[in-house]
Length: 208
Image (cartoon, rainbow, N blue to C red; front, side):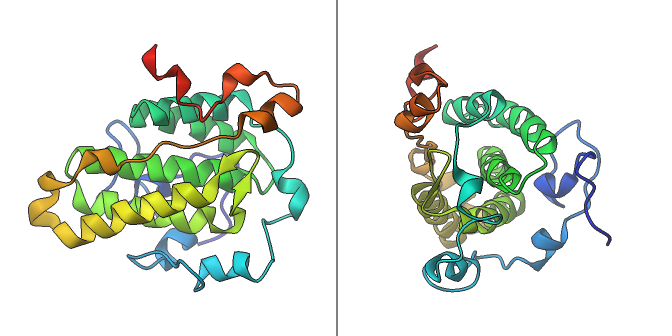
């Protein structure tokens, strides 16, 4: 498959067994196809790029600055467990972003879609999307644009491993309290002139 076109919506967020209702039938990306069912973590595979100090694609400048408004909106929706709606907001953000930080937004989106499928007891969709999202976020550890990437990946990995432990037959027994929130450092947004009310782990808005 040729290079992905930034301007066209991609379905690898909703791979086979993981398509959101009303979305076109997807074609998985090279990154998605190449991922194992369990993401590389703690010193191996994609995580090793971070431990060797390579950092995010495009260098440290990639992670400087605040989050765009659409990403803040998407994280708020994620933290309310409105996973379909977070997909729509974060998809708009990553398609509009030409730089490498777009994969930060896309990785968060994919983890959210994984939880969307988990809530609907779609074992394959949940497992695959959690894997793709964790792999995509790996280069941005430990944090990027105020997002605590390390804690999100670690929490998503716990969910992934619990899902594997339960298996397809017992997916209904998954403890939904394990689903994490995306934590955001409010000071990064304030220092960048965005205003503190946009973040604070993006979860303070959960009461309406």
